[in-house]
Amino acid sequence: MLKGIGASGGIGFGRAYHAVFEAACPTFAAADPQAEEKHLEDAVQAFDQENREAAKRLDKSGAAGDILRGHIALLHDPFLLPKIKEEIRKGASAKTAVERVCDLISAAFEGSDDEPTRQRAADLRDVKTQMVRLLTGSAEVGLSVLPPDTILIADELTPFMTAGLDTAHLAGIVTEQGGETSHAAIIARALHLPAALGVKGAMALIPPGAELAVDGYDGAVYQNIDKPLRERLLAKQKKAATEQAVDDRYRGKPTLTGDGEEKRVLANIGSPRDLDAVLRGDAEGIGLFRTELMFLERDAAPTEEEQLAAYRAVAAGMRGKEVVIRTLDVGGDKNIPYLGLKKEENPFMGFRAVRYCLRHPELYKTQLRAILRASAYGNVSVLVPLVTCVDEICGVREMIETIKDELDREAIPYRRDM
Image (tube, rainbow, N blue to C red):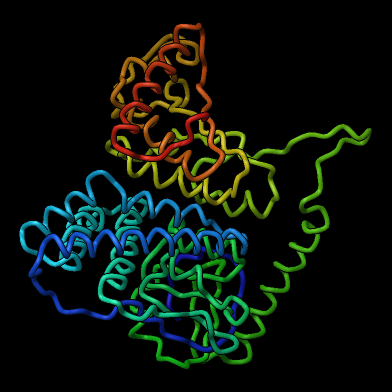
């Protein structure tokens, strides 16, 4: 048995199919920088078109097409493209420049111990793979036609690859990279495919064609399946299906009181790990994302990129339903040592939440930037906790307007009417 992370529930039986997405291409120098820059611009246009079309396919399948729209925004980052063009002017080919810059930036994220931060590296690898294919004229590696009962084995499953998947013949997904908040996890859940992610050594240890069972609940991958194991997994699957059938009778129906008054049932969450339960429970949105849980059990506050990864995973995963993100609520019963809160006689009523955040603008600005950026991926709104006067709300609004101006200058997308 191999063990990873159970990223999308379900039991899948089938045969291993290895997906190899990227073939090595030789590095070469550009003879004409001007021609190479034009070559790059043509590839960028093709990239944008491909991803827009792939996003529409994901939208139709119920998965998160906004992730691919985010990749378009990533390629057009005000640092990325100018840096690639700078490499071309120094003599590199367009292909080499794309590889060099994407590898340099993704390496900074890849070294992190934090999975959401590493997801940024995965985004850049996906962008790089597509751009290199377009620049070299390589054939697209397709997964649109798969054998029946396929268990897809891959080093990493990126959103663009997923957009063309033959889901009718796909019984499960196993990858060496990825975790609970990765794009592969979000899309697997949306497509209701059992998925075990972060299974180290899967490509080497699972031969093509091997008979497999994937337990997407706990991330286990089994080979050489005997009768007792099969029966145990089938019993687990049957129990989950029975529980799901009870829920499904009410799924998608309006929430009504006995006398016919319509209500909304929203979920409370503390991290992207709760998203599966929200979707299974058919919540009509997320009424409270308690962000302070991200600040606990750490030696320092989470970075903007770490927070963005978490907020984006939830916003995209809710597929247009409202997500209310509460800004940091510290103090009272949630004292976090590295934030330096002093003891108070009545900490529940004193210097906490929005008052603390406004007195620590860099900390608060980091969080508000991450929330604004995440608003590009879904229906996000902000809840400011424990406000005591109008001045506090005015202070938050002023900070948000300043951040919007910065994001506009940096050409970073966000929802203007959040």
